[in-house]
Image 1: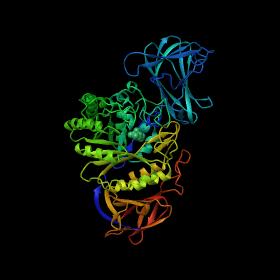
Image 2: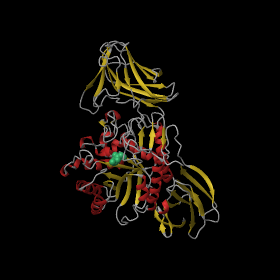
Image 3: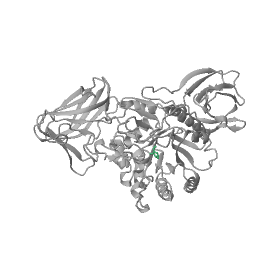
Image 4: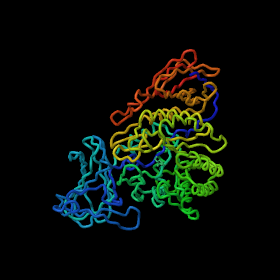
Length: 633
Ligand code: AHR
């Protein structure tokens, strides 16, 4: 193919172009990025002893009556349950926490234990904590001496003497009596930025390495909830972690996916932590809020229009929480959590995947309220899933009536769809709203099928599609792959960008596609044509080009989606390429190739220097390969 590059910029690439979609699905937050190792630490699950075992208790054995935990509810505050442990035979009673599919512990690493305790009946002299490996050997211990009849927080540090991915926490007692326990917590000392009770470092590092332009949170369907009552309410996720009201995760059970009945939201990662994470990564925060509609794939429960105030106030108060002075009610909450400076929120999303007249009626109310108080706030609206045909036309008409600014589109399709639709945005109205391609992923089998794989074929088709997103950067302002994370033993949805177990994590081929785009996003869009047409899949070749005003380089992205090699020749109009360039190449000979915990870099980019002769880039593109070339003119 013969292509031409026009070095004159045609549009700006928005700094928000490539970002992250975070949702607590597949154990992404609890059991994932939130480094807490104890599951159901405060006995708030609907089955209050879920996650805990008492092998020798009255509950589990008819013969041995060594003691028993009873979960007690006291007061009206959130998280008002605790465990009252009655120990009748201290030699026999054991309380074990199973962690999130076990606890990952690393040899030599320190772990911070904390718990709240008070004596109900005297007699218990010591609480022994042992971290035990799969073979039941202790690989770290601590002892706490409880003092007195009022609640006290006790802390200890434990160093692990071995690396174990499915450890458990064993609690035993010295002396018989009754003791109340709550908030039994264990965190690695070494968290992201060393924050106490913080985030898992390897997982955040993978995100940070993407150099994301924005962080969208907290989802996804969990924003909506199956019912309105179980929607995500940000106000309940800030302040003291012990008082953040736990709820069952919307992904805890079947939705055509794998049931995970022990999936709850502790909100240890709440809105403050999301804002902080965005700030750490230099990404724009993009919170999405409920618009008064529960998940339409589920109950579809609606808040009547005349009862929308609490929802709208959540949006207004969130802006105050993020941006207002410490003298305001919500600005003070932020400051009290350690961030007096504003988070500089610019975008707010209203509703996740909502559609139909009910959505637009509600969106209108939000737009009016937000814009009258915060005219500079940019509102992200939605179109519902897979905007196509009549649904799309209707949504487009309504969104235009409301002067929508940025519109979130979601599509989960097969790889051929992505290859065929790289021109999706070519014909979109240039004088209307901008696009947020907020959730997309090629499905190797079917949407969210357990058989889906993060195969090279899927990743390659996404790379081809992304050249189309980039080529339309005059209207495509934000893009993100979804879902983001999945625990290998606790997922509900596939495919996912990053997989992890309790110790390790890896980026999929799709991750490396995202990374190649986001770390080579450039600042200005250039036009790249063949026969005076944009290159958009002719002969199954895809390409886009940008300029990076900081480095002065032109960055060309090219995808060959053929099983055969292809020759290309690229001439810069009125200029010449310098003789040396950098090539980043992502490819595999096997379209089914995947990465894994054991082979995390099976499909990953290789960097090399290439030579350019005579100012024209001439290359043989390998079959099924994705290239990024950085060259100077
Ligand atoms: O990404 C998984 C789910 O897909 C999201 O929660 C939802 O928005 C979409 O249906």
